[in-house]
Length: 198
Picture (cartoon, rainbow, N blue to C red):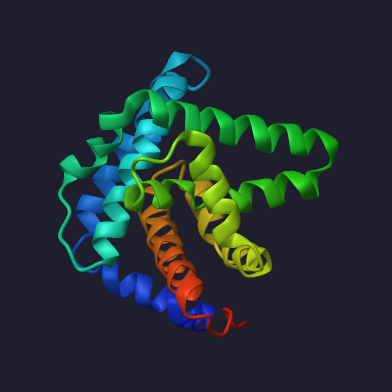
């Protein structure tokens, strides 16, 4: 059942309790490290996809009551090439739609935002199948997803103001909240429930 946005974020903080240090390390290594050392080079191309997959593994396990360790972030390297393809397709589709107009680009980003979580539960999907599955899951929920993402604006601004340090706490909060939203989407497929309320 989709709960209110406030309750969803409150639940996210609850799930993160006791995992602050671990989630910060996972965020630093998988999200910040490759881009810090080579922001415009080969590192993001090679590692952003596999690490995005690893983060999805970590935060889904976290909300499902497990205690994932730092090593979980490397799960995405088990299907290294597939995860690079997913990342490349996401970037290409979002950029192409953005070239037409900003709004279609935002919609594309939201449609494909669940692909990494999908691959945790359905690891045998191809890159294109994972994106199509994400698109199917988010159908009818793009408005909810957009407002949820927008509600993190000030948190991400905090990350920028703190020269990136704040992202060590903001990104886990964001990822946990989206993992919970993904769980709601999966549940809604089998048993349609009320959408996320304001």
